[in-house]
Length: 71
Image (cartoon, rainbow, N blue to C red; front, side, top):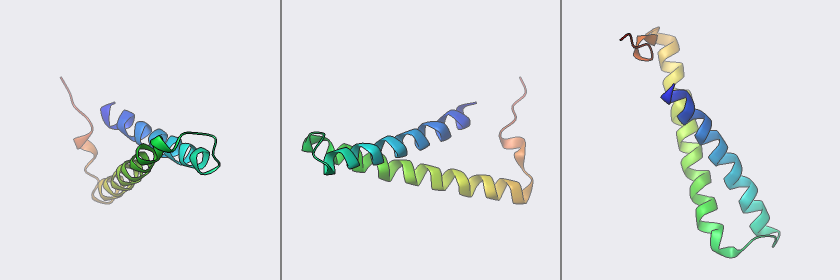
């Protein structure tokens, strides 16, 4: 569940960063948020990319037991 939520959060952060940077460029939002918008885009893109790479590796190796915990 945690990995799923992190994946969703990184996609949401990426999208909101892009939207906010567009608003800043159109003059609809303050310039003060430009750094945060860029950081959201960069961190979101890195997290999404790493998530895709990890899932591809797990799909190829078939080692999905990493996600399954039994208690």
